[in-house]
Length: 212
Image 1: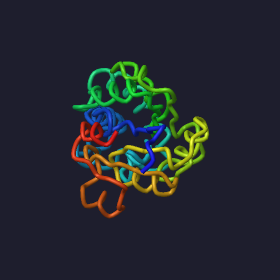
Image 2: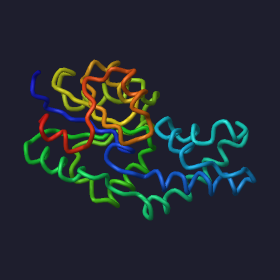
Image 3: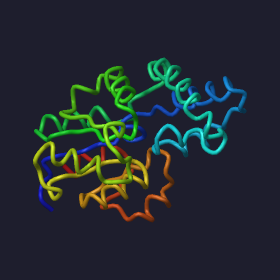
Image 4: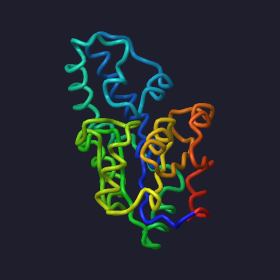
């Protein structure tokens, strides 16, 4: 394999754990409009597909805009209170920066909230470029976000690696024709990840150190 020049990371479930923040904001929003709260696992399983999926199928489409606005106002505070860096993340990022890899973020989160997390946890300084789905027409698993980042750095897909935590990350990498490494620390099961046949599946973040 050619040594990669560019390493693209997903955010939620890959570098950070913000599931408690998401669950707190989802249930605050649901209760505000008279809907019952959802169980944590059900919320976690719906993460990664965009905000609307967090409230599907409980919330009628005509109320979706209203509840997302409530969610966003609450979520700014919840992220500061509950988001955490996943074990091994800092060690990996420091190593990759030291060894002159170009690093980027590709997230289905809106840019505003992605940056809140990165700044709050002190991670923004490690990345050369951050691109989120609200700046694009399509969300992952569509490969648009990965292709746009590759073009930004003027590298080839063959010199790019994408690291995520979900089956949709494996799908996005495959569609962008880049190697996808999946770490099962997010909302997809190991069976769901294996079904997509990513380039590699690793047990933990620090396994990246032996690959690079």
